[in-house]
Length: 488
Image (tube, rainbow, N blue to C red):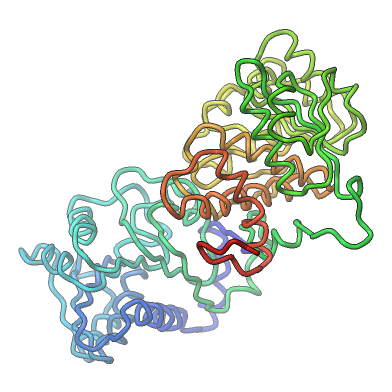
């Protein structure tokens, strides 16, 4: 797992090293220059433009620019505050053959627009609000050009703790961050501005506090998705019950059931009101025409997608929540639950709620800029795991532990994909994994599946179900079949 940290935690970890005289800026700049060199390929003769503010990020950029200039790059620093640029970094750049111009120079924007690589060192982790007009103009010029855009530690203009953007922020293709991954790089609007994140170790590890927010890797999810062994049977891999779909929305039941089957195909029991459609689509499922209590023994329930919000649906939701089993509540189930939150507050068994932003707001407050904080507050209030859907899905446990998902694609913003996520999460919940871990692993697998399904363009929810086995294999490191390979 990758730990995610706040700016305050990072600064506190840096303090004892700086007090010892550790050359943290030089270490950071060396790592930054190394990554930039890889991104450039041949460095000699390439045009590198450094956007330099008055803080330490500007110093990092200047020292990295000096290292690239020493390798033959044509490095130019554009100084937003010329009389406050880092003196040592500026001197190093000039010694290596680089030059500097003020941001007020009429040609500064053209330099950024024509560069091979633009390095953003305008603001650091303490920056507040969006970019000022002169900095915003430079960021726009870089974005409109053909340069590889690289942020130093964090893209200027994003909140390093929450990922919020108030105005304009630098649009980085890559962010080289130092010592620890800042939360704002992976959540909220910050994720879209950070691009690919590269972590440079500068020795903060022993001084960082225990992480309370994490990002899972494929290897972490592979540990959750343990393959069956010779001693397993259809009952030993976790039996999940599904209450989803209706006469109006039969597809929700079909998608949710199919996703559960494709994730961990031991046994799925369906107990919703779209029985005919589910039976036709998935003969592998055990379909019950009665109430959930008539479906047979399960280890976890998924309830809500497409089931409706009438009195009958409310009764089914209450029946499922009255069990001592883990329950995942989604979609219509969340609408009902927002009217009667005590149904979940008084549970002793694990509950996972999977709202998007509008469903979240039905519980009393908008998500706001701090998505991790919002998910944690609702989780603590209801005593349930909250999976807050979004570009970077956040999972929060009532104990405060959070996970931020790092997979996915914008193509997932289409009808039915949430039903697929519910089926995946329900299948993992039935294995007995801790509910927050099961939910976070489901979000990761769902996003990875979306990436595979979108390789050739737009996807629909059914494509996710079909690609789930390949995604499971991908997180386990199994080789993918070649396009056109029949698999025979």
